[in-house]
Length: 338
Image 1 (spheres, rainbow, N blue to C red):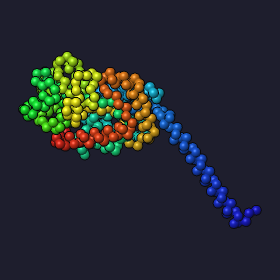
Image 2 (image 1 turned 30 degrees about the vertical axis):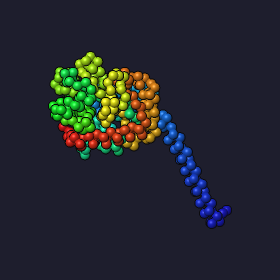
Image 3 (image 1 turned 180 degrees about the horizontal axis):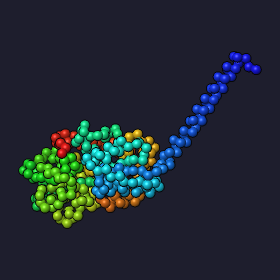
Image 4 (image 1 turned 90 degrees about the vertical axis):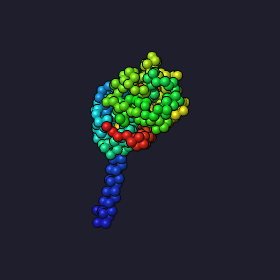
């Protein structure tokens, strides 16, 4: 039999051994679980919130991205359209979703424009409430004029605008839209005065431009390429860094002497803040593989988009830079939301 002192020492040693072994068992069980989860994700349907009604570029790209992820990861990805509020309704729903990787969302340039346009009225923090996944693609704008406007290039366009301040007008899909801010960016950088005519959506803007209701407009290359090639509109310059294949004879703004005009709508995938880094990386790597080498690359190019396929960090940097840029343009132009 142990005396009292020996018995206490024995019990203390036993307890320490027991606790140490339990801790080791817990750690050993946690590591395989943590490592395994990204490898088996997703284990159920993933919802992609698209902050627009069905149809349109952002919806189409969201569905294409979902198809690529579904094919690669073997699980269903469904589109969930939540339009309204200038994209803020759907984006707010994403910010409030559980950060488990089973609700992700599409964004476009409105995501980086709204902080400057709406300010404190924005129902989420663009830079804090989300985890960027990947910039999928961009879509360069092209500046076009009605053929009756006596200009042939950017130099003559700017000369005419300076000679008659405020007489040249352009239409857009509404205040704060990408085409509106492209025109504002051009005006600020070139030192010209032009009139902005906001429409309720972009459907009739090109129709009215073709009818000569105003002198010029910005829109994506796929939207205008047919009219340009048919001579119904005259292309002045594109906002991309390089010339676009659909319009090989149209110079970039950089080539034309005004490199600061760089409005190119972006389309990307994000998740709620708090989603595990491993899941974000898995989604991003899978999407990048398809964008860079897979069928998605071909589909994007055929639709007139420029495939990107960025890392989460690269997309995050792009978002931050775009927010800074558009906030500055909006403030300088004293642009107020409708």
